[in-house]
Image (cartoon, rainbow, N blue to C red):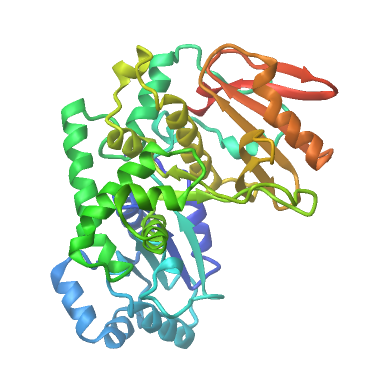
Length: 416
């Protein structure tokens, strides 16, 4: 079993909060982690995937929660399946006022679920569990977020045995625990069923979507995959699948709530009033995006994958948010694009205002022009607490000075 690096954080938070929630996409390993923690913490475990439990909880939700939690801390899997469970949990924790009373998991973001009207604010700590990071898969003791905000880039541990093929495999395979090691045909079958199950089963837990609209959602996923790492143009997307703009916006919000995609906001502050405000779209898992684009490792290594650069960028994003979930440094992730189309793929801003900007290039050759976006951002924000990094396909960590600004080139392979 792969050790999940967020486990210790979840266990610690049970000491301080009445409710702890683990949210994330289906098949990301939530249930496995929840069962492990529940056993170690002597919590009674229930899942709404079990028909008898689901029926009992649905019939009399308040009574169900009251009875199971009166003298025992409990763990409930797939809470989004019964939205009215949240008010019942709120009543129970307000009455009992006991730390670690509930450990919940859900395959949708309860804060974006229109069917959940109640809030557990002040009572709950919530965490995201994404598919496996490659630090977890390869059992590496590193948090890439904390490392990027450090002052010592020369000590990055780069496994010299890792090859370009290893990295491309990571990008194309993604990190879903059940799929990343599967052979090609089995992987294709897994993703086909995964998408079908998500659309037919989970959409209904977020919004009331008519069955005749599900084909549009399937098309939307493929269109978004083709635009991964690009600015979202709702009108173009709507036209391509013959839906209204507002409907596309709604469906994209649903896909976000189900942890399929993520919209990355533009970086802005008082000094950046002219920055273009459109978000960029990324997939939570680069393996799913690769499947939707019919991309494989062999074609990518032979230079026959026109989407490789964008898939590498979305892979970087997926690794960043996985490390973000358990990093010491509290950050937000943005993208930057100025009115002259100079861009930076990711802008990481800490709670103290420190900034690490990341530009992604899959090639191994370094050129000054690759740093033009980082240079534009450095000149715009004029902060001393700014670090600019080019993550590239080479194998050496190198300082790179442009004008008076010191940047760094760091191999993408530090992520695996």
